[in-house]
Amino acid sequence: MMRFTEDFLIGIPEIDREHKKLFVMLEQADEQVMAGADIRTTGMQLLKGLQDYASTHFAHEEAYMESIDDPELPRQRKAHRAFVDRIENTNFVGMTDDTMREAVKDLLYYLSQWLMHHILGSDTLIGRIKSPFAFTDEYRTGVELIDNEHKKLFDIMGRVNALIHNEDLYDRFDEILNLIDELKDYTVFHFSDEEKLMEENGYPALEAQKKAHRGFVEKLEEINLDDVDENQEAYLSDLLEYLLHWLTGHILGMDKKIGEFLAKA
Image 1 (cartoon, one colour):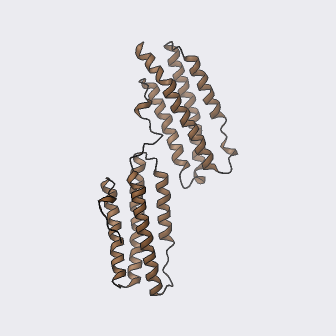
Image 2 (cartoon, one colour):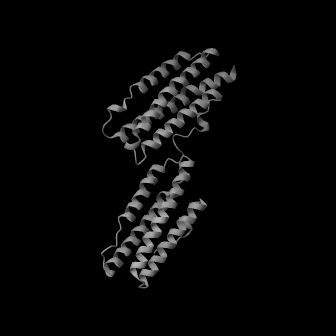
Image 3 (spheres, one colour):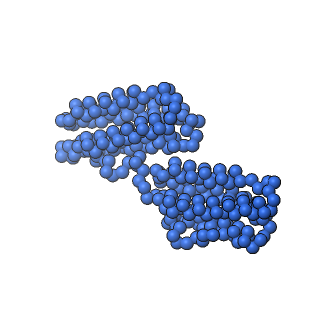
């Protein structure tokens, strides 16, 4: 049975403490099995401990990732769900002591392997991958109005993305529709503000901006999620990827020039 070593530290104290607690739980159960302790007591205590652990640790970990807008959160949730399913599907009822002993050994082996791969392959990445929906300094134009509204657009897209990768996608489809409508409305509002600002300041590339804006709005107006009856997650993910790619490219290629022009005015 593996022991908790520095190799498994991810640098987040609360998560590290909870990981260590799980290692200790598995180690103690393994020692009891090897020592020939009452297997029914050992097995039932292990299941109870795992259920309690999963309900608290995974909630803490996911809440932390959500607070930092970690893009790996959907993948983590799926991995956590697999762990919980394995525990919930474990049933020792009706087993002989010998059969149950082997079942507990198999469970301990699965858990030790899952924990090792999950920590080293996933948890060590927490907080280290930038969300594509984060409004970072590279997107700042230096114009407060434009930057604040761009940040809002990134935020809406981020919320759409979170819902798309939610396990209850089909139950939350109405929420996604509402967010898409919010994105459409706010985009039109933002483009109006941006064009007004450019016009008031005599920005020379105003017409090129208007043309780009019209093209994007037309793309948004083409979205009809009522027609999407299969592969909803794939369709929405592709759509969001296109929208994000357009927005970041437009900001970096065109909108930052507005800030440069106004700074010289």
